[in-house]
Image 1 (cartoon, rainbow, N blue to C red):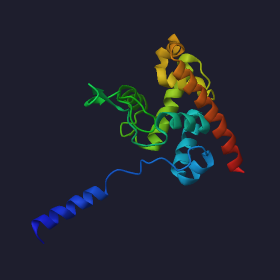
Image 2: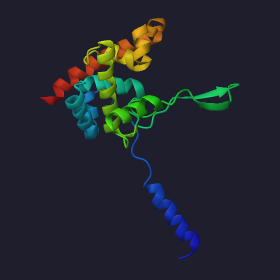
Image 3: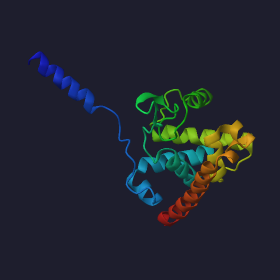
Image 4: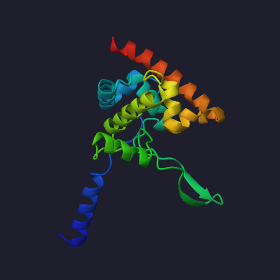
Length: 193
């Protein structure tokens, strides 16, 4: 076998072993369709509900808002002079859009050093950990998707300071997260029957 043919075969093998399926489920407005299409999501949500007591519908509404269920989601690029790429808006990545520093804190505190933000099980576990910190620090119930989202977006200190009150767009988005959580909750109750 020629050298170039061997090299081509190796490249094709490596490429075929590449990343996972990071695409979003087909119908993001139907919680039952999401969990039917991606049963591994449902297993991850249930595991977090058992471990951290964060309801499935709150997790789903937050992931919808953060990444639209796209596993390798990133923030948009910033541009200088409108054309020169200057890097990402932040280090947020994955299903949960966790920032580098917060993700590292999660890994240290939970001992989950192999956890990855683009793996649904790890991303949802991170959210459960973070939302429990929010409950401890800011007194927000784990069932309160709207305010959990505000604290998730602004950080614990930003939420405590009320930084979201100066952001009408964020208040609107957090209301939408609360509405989506209620919609997902109702749908999940129906599809369990």
